[in-house]
Image (cartoon, rainbow, N blue to C red; front, side):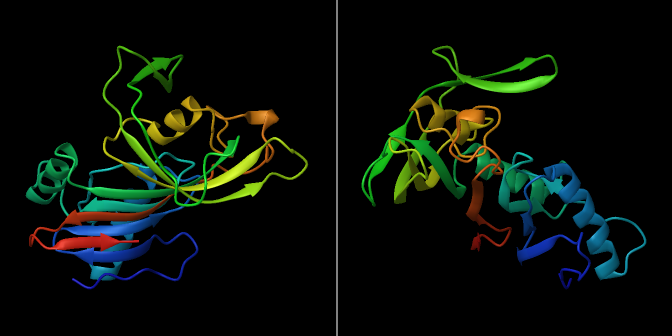
Length: 224
């Protein structure tokens, strides 16, 4: 089938497609579920079908996070969904994020660090929150410093742009891990500096910029 993005402002931008998989751009402020629902209706129109196309969510991005979102071409329980879910479960999927954190200088350009604090996710008053806990699950985050900037009007604070790669996929993992080393993400109103931030009115500065996974054909599928 031909895959195309529509010209409408609410259309989902399809970045790439392969056997059993699509990669789309999810904007900040839009839930993953809504992005997939809109894509299902959009593909039905593109392909001239009378009902929405069956799609499977194999990964999620938090609502305030933007970036590349992989979607399986098939309903839950179908081979495409199981194939991609198995790769996530086996930690065979490569995902790279870009984030901007604040605090003391994290390191020189090219510096690499690993955060391995175990994480525990709890639900309080209907809201999900993740915290560092000795009783939590294994969580591993690797970051590389891309660049750093002196924060405006805050002599002791730096803004550090990082490329982040996950070896595990815990809820809010990057946000909590960066906060745990004293470098909360800019615009994080749950785990961040909030009103004390040097950029208090900014959106969450977290973007998934690249994924690598195997398509149904067994070939490497890359989207960015």
